[in-house]
Image 1 (cartoon, rainbow, N blue to C red):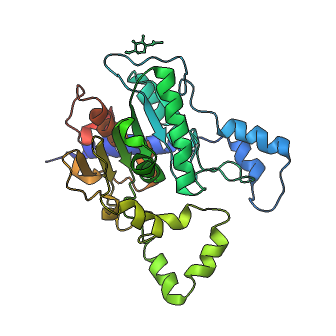
Image 2: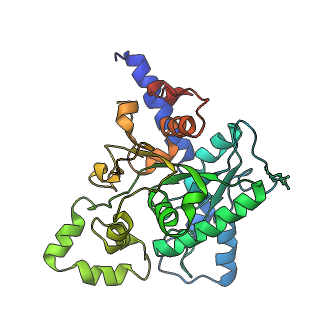
Length: 313
Ligand SMILES: *[C@@H]1O[C@H](CO)[C@@H](O)[C@H](O)[C@H]1NC(C)=O
């Protein structure tokens, strides 16, 4: 494919302007109040106040009166990543899914007591239980039997525990995810490096109380070994897993691919959709190409050709 210089510039601008506009979804006052983390104690009122800001989904999301339409027959549930929340992770994609006519829901999972503003920290098994409760609530509210999931980062992994171990396979139709973690990360080789230095266990002891999920993401962790044992997918669910070659959190990025020989599984390299797309791990949640790829997967009536032009719409 040949791109003119101005076309390349337009795509680059479209991608970059999304990042700038959407990169600070937490009200800056809330952030200032918590800086520097760890140096001050919070009153219960302060924590409640900021939790209220942080756990407020985008307007229109979590509308418990929404009824799915014939064109969008299933609710879409957004599953955030590590240190994300129902609000911060989805400031860009929530309004876009709403504009497409879906009933959109988002949860905040895996919070640890006394740690405000960031979530996804608890054990993945515990978070999957919270997802299960949330999905049942959405199914009852929408009077449907299945939902579709859209996950980022940990949101690509935690739901797989739900699908495999908590009865989720019968309640999910499609599972789209980006910045996927399927087989864990070496964190740019840091994990094997620490093991080599004999520092793996001491550091794990320090990190575990503030992030119980963190070591579960590492390639070869007992959690991942168990989760992927006997196959990484469940029958009946369609998977659309997107990885970026520029991902600096999931390394190597290919470890984000599902490996089952299952006709309902599609792994997509973001740069195969658009070679100009530079999104790394976090920026994928602000990426119009990722959004349109997921939307096309969820709704087969949509244009299925995804390429650099999707950065402009
Ligand atoms: C729920 O869906 C079922 C089956 O489609 C239908 O028969 C029933 O009337 C619906 N209930 C409500 C409250 O809409």
